Amino acid sequence: MALRNTFANQASAQMVWLDQNFTDLGNIDYIPCTATGTNALTLTPATNAPAVNAYTNLQGFTAIIPNTNTASLTVQVGSLGALPCFKASAAGPISLVGGDAIQNCYAVFVYNAALDSGNGGFHVLGIGTP
Image (cartoon, rainbow, N blue to C red; front, side, top):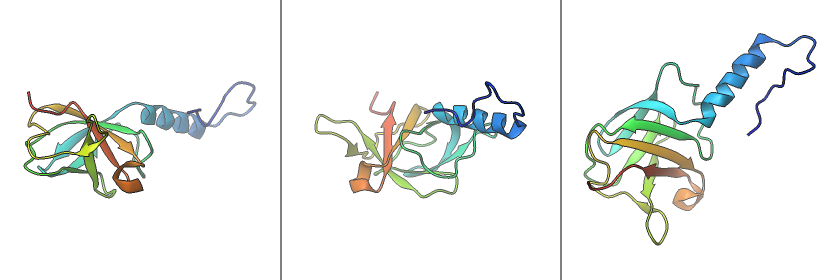
């Protein structure tokens, strides 16, 4: 991903361009979040994180699992739509089941537009039975 603005050879660079570049850089890394819920997690990005106005392919979010899930898991970031979560298997991504996301464990949620028959979903990393 290229940053939106290049400052070399600019006679009158604008401060908004710097803000845009900082937002771009923030979206390259995982966005730290607070999670609430059990089977339907809501992730709230940290106050100093870039604004999340839409899911972007391969965009990542991190959180501590607040409660062990008892069924399949969905994740919603802020006010965006809730999407299903998947874990890796030998046959490819499969839906999480009860007990996959364990309370107080760190997890990474990576958006993939191709999951759920093209409707989008999250790969979940850092989950599983200890």
